[in-house]
Amino acid sequence: MKTKLSLLFYLKKPRNYQTGPMPIYLRITVESKRSELATGRECDPKTWNTGAGRVLGNKEAVKSLNAYLGNLEQQFLDAHASLIRQGELATAETIKNKFLGIGPKQRMLMAVIVEHNRRMHSLVGQEYAIGTFKRYEVLRRHTENFLKANFNTTDFDIGRIDFAFIADYEFHLRSVRKMGNNAVVKHMKMFRKIVNICLGNGWMNLDPYLNFKGKFKKVDKAILTKEELALLAEKEFASNRLTQVRDTFLFCCYTGLAYSDIQSLERSDIARGIDGEQWIFTQRTKTNVKSHIPLLPEALAIIARYEDDPICESRGLVLPVPSNQKMNDYLKEIAVVCGIDKILTSHVARHTFATTITLQNGVPIESVSKMLGHTNIRTTQIYAKILDLKVSEDMQALKGRLLSESASRPIRS
Image (cartoon, rainbow, N blue to C red; front, side, top):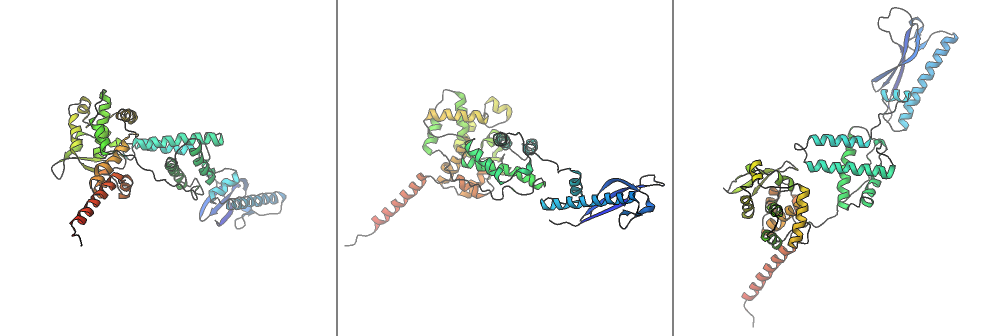
């Protein structure tokens, strides 16, 4: 973008000045904003031409000084033109820095990610869940690995990040890290947040994501059937830890709570609702959205089972929930013992609540959305896969009605 540049040489009166030569300064003005530079030369005020910004006289010393000032002026004009050609911001300060050989402060990618994660960690529990912070720590490690593999470096100048960098990073995640499509898309979305921070601070000139497109592929979410839920509920385990994890998993299936929500669920979060029955009144850790859930008999039975549990009593918790990693490990073991050929996770439990427990039994999707603590019903529609079993039941009922109507019609002779 073109900018109006004004250059002016002037004499600057030193502090406590009385008589004698004054230093010559150059004032650079761009769009009414100024910067100045000492020329390293001086002149007697009596021989200074303020209008021309030059020294009066014909002596060789005067000619030499004026030639020096003219050369200096041209160098600043060249610096200004160079910034314009390179598409860089031309201000009074950047023109002066260009002349002095001072480049813009170099911003490094890993430093931005580390600072972003540091700030996020300080807000865990207020604005972010610990799981969100951990995902950005994974982003940091994957970015470090990518820089080492592709550039043999530990950091990268933000100003050099372009579309090719983004495309190469995506390819690295797919080919080297062996990540699936949706995992790659989520990862690149997180990296875009880092890029947006850089753009917002003016550390990047162009958005490298401008022509980049990543698209989620639709995947079927694993859920449990009524028969599988019954199998889990009726199974007796030799290990107390497996029994506790099974109960926690089933509680998620009957309430729709995510792992982070059930881990922090306190006894005080359970109270009588508008209908006089027991409800859960909580706030989702992930979104801070309020979630009100009427408790089904199966969930109430699980709560009663742990009323006298010493850990739950001492901490005021509803259930003794292990760490997420341990819970997932135990759930794998439980699936094998029960003969369930599915990977059991707290996400599967939440999906099961949305489908097998609620939608399949005629609960309106608006109510399901509210219980899940979603801010947008479209999010619920992703969870709410209508089972083939439900479709089959509906069609069987329709066939029955049609047959009944057919049988009741009089037979024409």
